[in-house]
Length: 284
Ligand SMILES: [Fe+2]
Image 1: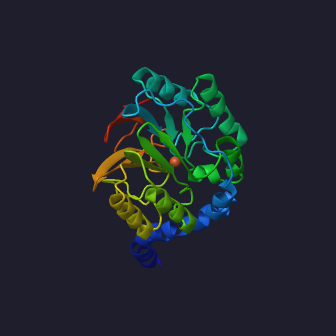
Image 2: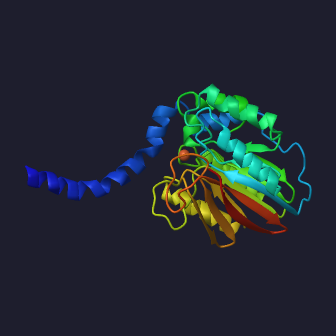
Image 3: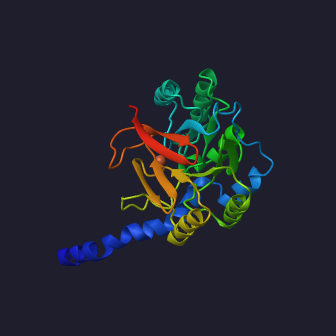
């Protein structure tokens, strides 16, 4: 009996993560109460977040990006991020999904209150994460932040925001993304997505669940010369350049920390003409 159990452990356990990975879209759908196709359709006609005040120098500016703030009502870390960004001259703020831990209305409201009080509403952009679609979170999210996919311009850069909250991009959103990349674009193009096509130098399932889709996105970014893809879901900081595209994982906003960066942080992205550089700024 004991032998059979240890045999089972040895043979079946390594397969378990793969089975769980394959089940991610299904499980997400079960708990979310919304699906990507519905969210895409419901986003049509919604007003997207936009930059209310243009950046001061369109060729040279910086912004803050962080994912996985996992808010449960307490916004004190966001306040410290905003203070740090203000002192360093950041001009807008992007949260890369998993804004709240569970998307109850009273988790989103304190964030909007803080952004408004601190003068950051109008220079804030959100991305939908898997925690933002739990139960009826999507309903609250779209009331407060608008569509699940959208684009905005800041200075010499265009930002394309995706809904990968189910771990996938999906056919309709692919078509939208490709059409956006076919349009005339300014100097730089950024894609913002909760799930990343890759998490550089880390062996993890915490990335797009369909590896073909992930490969397709990397190919598209190379072909269309996307400047950078920023995301979270993996709660750490790791980055790499493939082709001419920078892949930046910035999931340090407040969730359980993961290797290699075991602290909370945000990433400051500095745009200078057609070059960018990023810096991880620890914030406890
Ligand atoms: Fe997260």
